[in-house]
Image 1 (cartoon, rainbow, N blue to C red):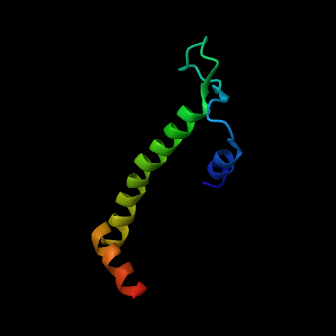
Image 2 (cartoon, one colour):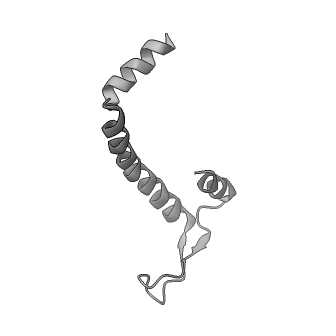
Length: 77
């Protein structure tokens, strides 16, 4: 997550092209994406996969998100 934050902080122009990583699933003629698109994509991926970790945590501790929110609010005061 620290690397993601560092990369977000470096972006000063959302139109800046970001190079496409070398991977066989990207078209050979695709050179880059705008930083705007890349940042939106990373944000969506992080949000999507956060739920996956939640499933693992719920399996371990048996507490759902609503119960944890109630406990956190009770502790906050």
